[in-house]
Image 1 (cartoon, rainbow, N blue to C red):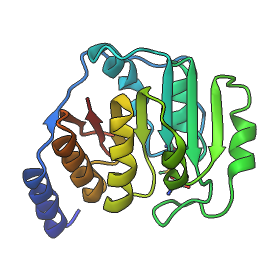
Image 2 (tube, helix red, strand yellow):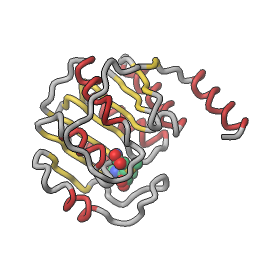
Image 3 (spheres, helix red, strand yellow):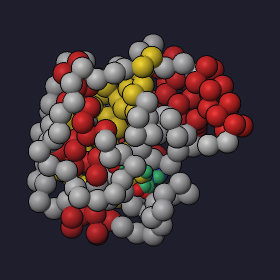
Image 4 (cartoon, helix red, strand yellow):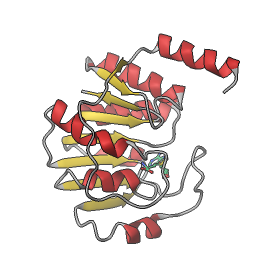
Length: 198
Ligand SMILES: C[S@@+](CC[C@H](N)C(=O)[O-])C[C@H]1O[C@@H](n2cnc3c(N)ncnc32)[C@H](O)[C@@H]1O
């Protein structure tokens, strides 16, 4: 990392402070997918978050499934996991082009996962449910993360966001959503960062 990018990162952390949340205990979930994902490592702290904030284990909604690494992690803990993705990739992902069928096939044995090929913008217009946990890991722009994340924070007891360390726009969106909803925001600064709004 160059000195300039180190200074920029420090500036972002000072401007958008998020309280650090070290896990009390790390747990490996029973099922994980043997694939590469920038999410890897975070599976160890999900149960800790659920216990710490007393989150029920009925329903989870995820925006940004890609090949399903995080989706399968959530399937260890919830009765039902709904995964929303365009399955087209975006400007920040390596994967471009349709990967719905491939992901659907590799997640078929996880019977509590339901995948929907949809833009979050269309999904949030028609869903009025409340979820125990929501996860936002879509394109890492401010506008989309804020819009999707605001809906997710308003429709869940706990909402988590990936890439708070690697994308300043995500960190800023998490900070603003917590401020504008009156909720509390925390951050786990490893594996590209996980923002937590409760
Ligand atoms: C970083 S990947 C998700 C990684 C995944 N959570 C994991 O554990 O590996 C981001 C995903 O968000 C999806 N995405 C981007 N913009 C979207 C949008 N507007 N609506 C729905 N999905 C979107 C992309 O298609 C891509 O699959």
